[in-house]
Image 1 (cartoon, rainbow, N blue to C red):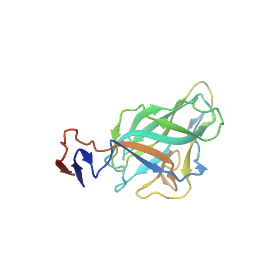
Image 2 (image 1 turned 60 degrees about the vertical axis):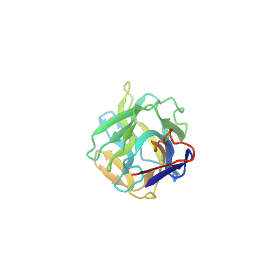
Image 3 (image 1 turned 135 degrees about the vertical axis):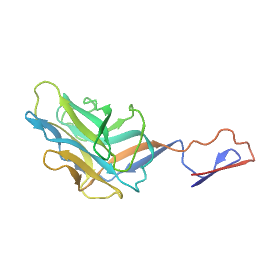
Length: 193
């Protein structure tokens, strides 16, 4: 892609921050939860595959729509690599909505930005529970059918790890191109990716 600046203005290209939204939802996901004897579904999120718009982009924020049933549970936004190596991004502040308060939007923006690679997954991970509580869960809003190309829901579960039907509802911000600040009025600057 060629990016052209003329007379100090950007003619073509991306802004400093770009937002991508998968807005189809309407369904709460299966629970990401803990029981006393073992972890059950420890992760649910979106897997981004070769050809997806976000591959190679530097991710700066993630917004999900979620609900939970216990403010003492410990959940995190994480990135899993294509081989499921986990990188913790940011804790979920469980006070963002009252227990059983219904779906509410939550924006993660305190993590260190990272570049998304093919096969990476972004989602919610059950990381622990305080006290002796059991049966705690968090759910994220999803589409129950596959609506996004080159992406899919992915879970880690005791008995069924891998792709599942549907797509995560999300808004993700990523860093765009930065226009040069030294283009003189009346001049032309062009760069090619």
